[in-house]
Image (cartoon, rainbow, N blue to C red; front, top):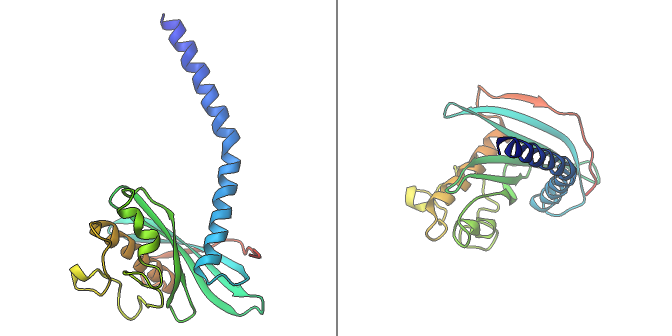
Length: 199
């Protein structure tokens, strides 16, 4: 009986490893395509090129957090601004957003790359803060004033019944701006190889 269980465990382990190996490439390709589409979306949908990708490590509340800053240019090689990947903890788990900033630090757009928020409540973050919506943050600059919910003395309307998700989202956006502006003195930056992507 023990021998049978050992054999079954080994076979199942092998099958799982094989499936993981087979799906690893397509999953990575899909994530890369989603990121490329996200950069285009948050930077205004123009034809653009990603001219640099910087990985920035910051210590926030005693924990190391990693940001990726994608610098973009238009077809005339003029700077459009940056798209920043930022992750924080939401109500249900990690909340990862991609936020676009123009050259003056104003928010041009955002998209949710990953979340584990409650469907129908916290999951509304993908639309709630878009232009023309109740929590609209587009065009605002965290440089002038950090984005904070009204309940905490700020100016942003929280998602109905999802204040925790709203706080997490705004924290991710504010931290994305700080990474872009490289505000923290304990931050370490490491530029990755320059990558050009036509979108």
